Length: 402
Image (cartoon, rainbow, N blue to C red; front, side):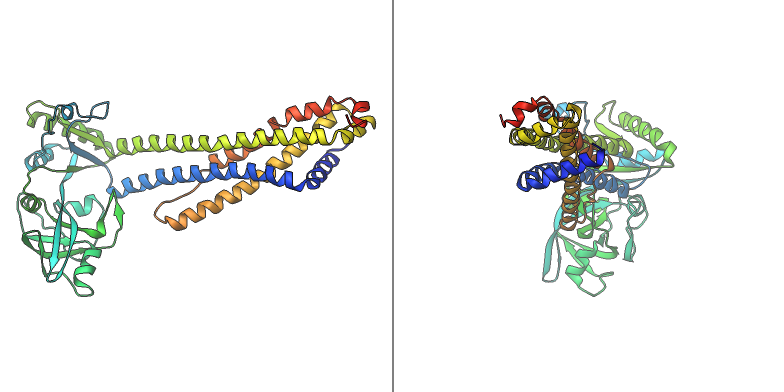
């Protein structure tokens, strides 16, 4: 019996039991589709985070108040201690480092913005003129925060594009006055539409000088400091310099966290890759379930085809050929199930992409190959026992239907 005859015989047998064949293909395709969709979600989340950090800027070092220990918790928090604030003077002192090109102190809070009868709650970001270039932001109209002393509390602001549209409609807001909380600010610029970045929508923020934000919120500490190193080689020296400068200014206490953008990104990348592998592995369990289904159904098929197997053996078919017939059925089932599951999974990915366009959902090539390979290996492996059982049947007993 030639290989083509084996395939044709197996295909005819499968077509003869369409309900049974359809159920096995469905089980296998659901398993493959689950792997494709879940790994696509995990990979999409990873790419989204990478893109968000890339949009944050380049050659960056981030400074946060409080010390993050290995355990991920500031020990002082357990004793009710509040991390020491980072001041504007601390930020200014960082410019002593030759590895640092510029700094951007940031403070953040919420307030109500109003213009005549229109008002709404907004996120207010206090910063300096450097924010525009460090964060790779762009203006649509007017100008950004003025250069100069970061301690200057000028009553000026820059509106996000959505805030501008809601308060002023089609009119130009540049030069107009708005009220933030109990203070008046003159609008000097409008940000271009940029969407979400690192957890907040830049189209819905109001940017004011950092000292003005401190007065508005009655605070003095900074939310974080963005440091831009002079080049990629200067990132690590900039981090070390920032640590040593703040260590000296804070009386020898390590009460700030200084991390590079690459380090944060690498951490997120490892976490999300592990998550992708985990959800892919969970989904792959369904392929094992599908393999067990194939084994059970094929064992039933062996008992139903006893006379057929006996006739083949009586005609001289060796045991290896009998096994190859059942292996061929398993290969066909697994191949069709894999292909159908791949199509179903890609369809699911397209649906998710339509629902969440901001998430770059895409199944990694290794996940697709792993899903197809696992389904084939699973289907064939679980067919070994039924194939051996069929090959071991006594031809005389089999022809008698027992």
